[in-house]
Image (tube, rainbow, N blue to C red; front, side, top):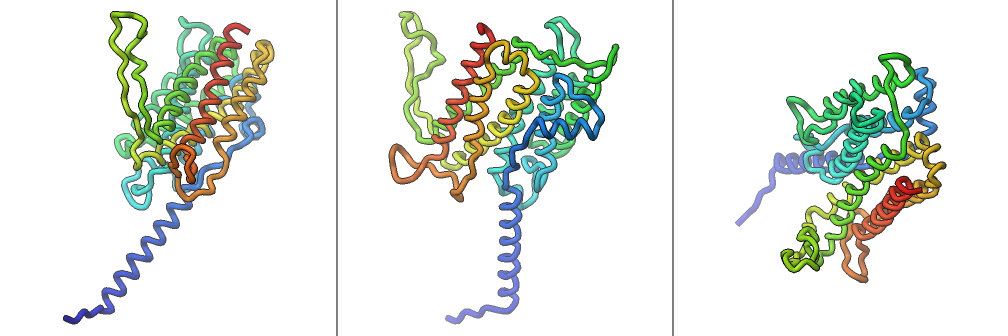
Length: 330
């Protein structure tokens, strides 16, 4: 039996190989995570460019706009809703984008509901009322409407809100840097970090008590059940990069909060607590030297990157809880 390999087949294989190499190179380039930035320095640059004074809320709003713009303007643009190669085959960067987006959603909600209102009965800010839902569209929606289109509109509306911070009279927007407002946002942060920590810890798989069944000291309460939770091997890297993206965005937002809420934090002796949170978040952004997310178990030879990330996030969450306590009672 003879086998002939024609020149045409050679050309086809060469073309396929070339396409694969090009797609792989593009994927590697598009998977490069954006660097952190100095929020105060960036806000001052924007202030000079836009001729808008830096008033309370300017740094936080500018930072939020920068986070959302990064999703749209980084190499490859917004990838989560792409339906064509090579991005359709990528999962790490879309997971990172979702982590960032979740922090954007939490902060935009806090700005609409708390930061821009003097009390619960106050009227909502006109621009934030429209901007906040723009970030809640399905992150994988690619048409009618597209996710990046709606996020871009949200950024522009945040810019309108920021511009009105400098005005006086009926058109002026407000940013109330109060301890109770900050606590409301921090409680969203606490819930987000707690969820991420649990997902990361599930990489090793272990029995977990069902804590949703209530107080076990009550004889009439349902019995506590055990369940085994373990993240699918295929999802471990997605959870890791979602946590990494969420931590990146939260790091910048905490730096902005330290600036805009400085007087409140000093009054509550909470500056050190904020800086401790920032330090833990900075640790989550250390360079990844491994080509893949490792999932070693126990004290084995291989590292478990998910557990390392869970450690930093858990420590950060504990610091957030302490900060909430200080703001409430300090």
